[in-house]
Length: 144
Ligand code: RTP
Ligand code: MG
Image (cartoon, rainbow, N blue to C red; front, side):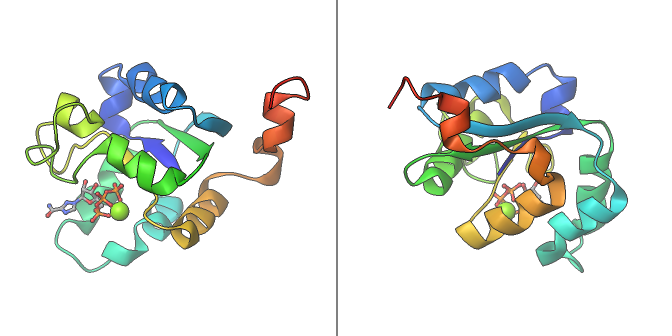
């Protein structure tokens, strides 16, 4: 699962971010602009609970609506994280989302699930079944 976080929305970079995943050939199975509740934010970032930056993370992801997307493809988790770039934009390679648009670790534009287990857990926090489309439904019968 990918999030275009508050800074991406406020800076008008959602299209740029989404386009990079589309151009890589991934299939979008879910996509929405949404307000994240405190409860969703805390569950999403549960692994960081107790760290000094945790309250700021929750504030950041609940500050404005964000865009959540479910993306599928061959090795999509690794590929999407490579497209997003290193956590700290200063260390992110130019050509990645964070390397091209980011300045600071606390405002690094996008989130990408880091494992299939995380993806499954996170999708359930942000989407319900009616908001997700099977690959065959998205692509139709006429394209392989
Ligand atoms: P993400 O979960 O957002 O895709 O990012 P990530 O895997 O590259 O980084 P992660 O370690 O999961 O951290 C989640 C978010 O917390 C913020 N962070 N701040 N101040 C700090 O030292 C620090 N470390 C992490 C970042 O915004 C990161 O995206
Ligand atoms: Mg992470």
